[in-house]
Length: 591
Image (cartoon, rainbow, N blue to C red; front, side, top):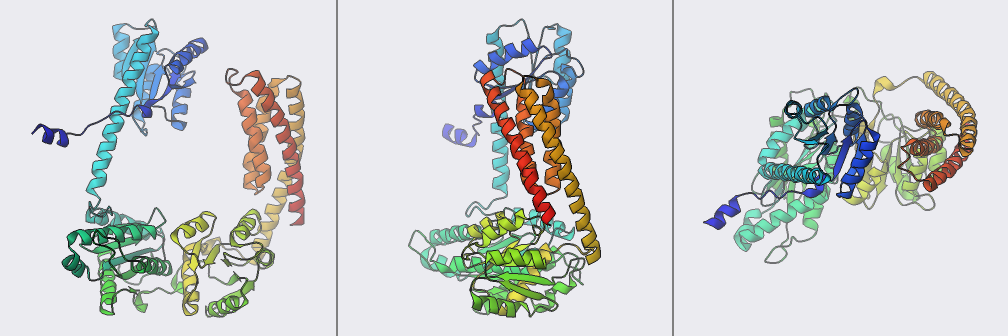
């Protein structure tokens, strides 16, 4: 009996690592220094602020679970700080300890009513303060353990206990959420319904433990094919699963469905009785916001999805069924998007280039150019300014990823969307290529008869809105204005670099009064350089901004040796900034 009670009672073990940081708030610098040494010696990470306003600003940028504050301070005092802390949402609970010389009963009650958790006189011993801190740490640890327990319970209520996939309750709640998001313009929403073929035979022949293992392995393999955090899978029936792909057009969903089907059927599924061959039938449906001529609801999508999956069953199983053509909205019907007019395809294999160019020319109104190397891609991109580029990943010399990096570094062509074409379109590789800046990934070998439709479908998710387009004359004028302003920025920055060098010379001579001006100038160059697309100039200014900020910090933070090192690095960074401005000016003039 006692064992049953103990098993049913949650054990909230405090996690002391969650409350290692303390914020000290006192307007007396000597008191702050003393408390800092004392609290740090007790094993805590210590931050400090001179008044309530500064403390609140620090908390908003760097959440700190324990606050020790004086009661009487200028501007925002301790009571006001307590009230402000209690009025705002934080990632966790903030334990507030009032530490003040005013320890009368009325002062204590006022502090506790304002939201303080504890009250300690400044006349108390250091041991009492450390003991109160450990109490705060224990309470915060228990609070964190309780929150974790509640989150675990919530997660369990939305999770299928056998497979670890989301359960039907989660599916009903979150599909409605994703559907409404798509309706509000969140991009196309695609659904996949998967049913394990002949699952009853597996249970009847090998037993339910083997069937359970098959379900678990299928969910694991589905997860391998869903690299994006926004994609999710739910178990909606015995052997039925629905996969939800946000901001994914039909062509992309078809790729994911085929990948899942091949991943499940490619290798037998491990079970306690040995490997068992398994396959899956999949149906696919897509919702395009604002493109349908009929009233579509979650219920109608699920009905069509179920029908498409059933068609896969009827046609022999182990296959994917897409929506009927009448439900596929052609790209030309996508309102408000720029049409795809020019495309650059790059591949070092001439036969593949010819096939791809022929296949893509099936799209009406599309002009297709080709390149055989990364170097030629960059040259043609600057000359043609295509709407879209398709790059082979493996090319000699400058491969696809390196070509994309060079492309993004050139302001004139940095915004051209890129789709990678690769024979290694695994979820891991696709995620890596998207992280480099690719808009999508197309697997090789592709079906030439479907390539143009696939590219046009992907284009709808990345095409710029029509209202952002301007005529050729307007674009030329806009480019000229940007170039002129960028040139003005570089001229101004050249003068500022000379000013920074003069300020650095004064700093080396021992005049620290120039630090604030140096920091302000570097801050402006840092932000403006990024705005005008001069990353090297912006990076150098950012380093100067950081180093000058370090020198502006309180003296106890940096010893004399480290200050000397910072000043030397500061002078070198200013020289780098001058060189970056000269290089940027040369490149800008060439444009």
